[in-house]
Amino acid sequence: MDGLAVPSHGLKLLSGTANRGLAEEIARNLGIDLCRVNLGRFADGEISVRIDENVRGNDVFILQPTNPPAENLLELLLLIDAARRASAARITCVMPYYGYARQDRKDQPRVPIGAKLVANMITAAGVDRVLGVDFHQHQLQGFFDVPVDHLYAMPVFTAHYRKMQLNDPVVVAPDVGSAKMARGFAKRLNASLAIIDKRRPQANVSEVVNVVGDVEGHDCILVDDMIDTAGTVTEAARALKGLGAKDIYICATHALLSGPAVKRLNDAPIKEIALTDTIAIPEERRPKNLFMLSVGELISKAIRFTHSEQSVSSLFD
Image (cartoon, rainbow, N blue to C red; front, top):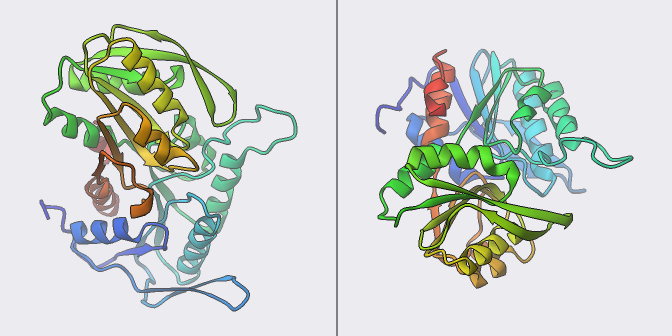
């Protein structure tokens, strides 16, 4: 367990149904068992939650990404409420993927700010702190009125690519918004940086306009925080190939893989797709050339440091 084991006294790890596999891996890394929770449905479809262990006075961590369906979010809220009413000493919401994070501003008339609404609900349910991975925008941390530890999956990806013999790699930001993340990634890999200038005529539709940087003859790593319909990264991969790039690699923390995503990824000139397990990916929704990386150890360390009141800053590097 690489020194991650913690005393089981006082720490409880609960999991919803959204990503049970990741929760089990984190529990193994911590050297504890998942807390027994009864999750079911009433006859009319309402979610039923019951914690089957005593959590009074314990440090409770609840792991649940809030990707669709919406039941995942409601399940999280009910788990938080159950732990609070069972007199847990502290409740930490461990949210590997922050659903509704893209609705972070009022960019059209008469639309909600969904990310703030979700943060309000989680806070109102009774959490004491939040632990997340690669929020869509950094300022989302300010949507919560409780402390937030924002972890980055970048160390997981850099460790993966350092093991590979890439040809003078170039890290490519698929849009201007990803440039800062890509720049940090390139620095850690001692690689060059390129940026794709794109426009988005409508939601989930993107169009490559220009590529800023030299990619000809280089292996390219396209880096993004999430892949939804895969339009952005597949169009970017084709543009890079058209400019003479050698092999195209894609990495993303959150794999939503909605609608035509898998077909688009399979049809694009991509050598490898590296994704993390913040969202559970069913076998039938996995593209070819997929390499899965786990954030289980990263989150395990964050839970351990939080429980023992140590700084988690070292995990940001």
